[in-house]
Image (cartoon, rainbow, N blue to C red):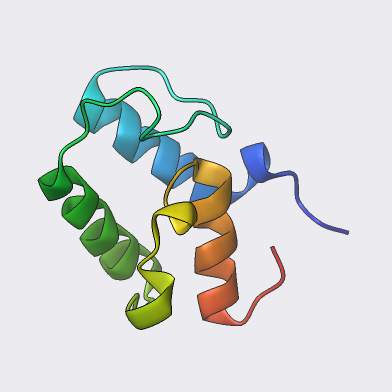
Length: 86
């Protein structure tokens, strides 16, 4: 049985990170880039956070905006890179 994204431990850590960094509430479906205001430096910080926190390497074709738009897409990326089903 698949864990709902909002209950996934990766999602919980990502939401906590985003809320701490942006001082704003985040839902798992909220588009990080649609509202603007997030810098390329923040995007890089997000990639580093994902790599260090979840033990994955993100490079090449995985460095696409579509993989970082929402918590849902980042959870799917982490699970895929870990070889797990999301």
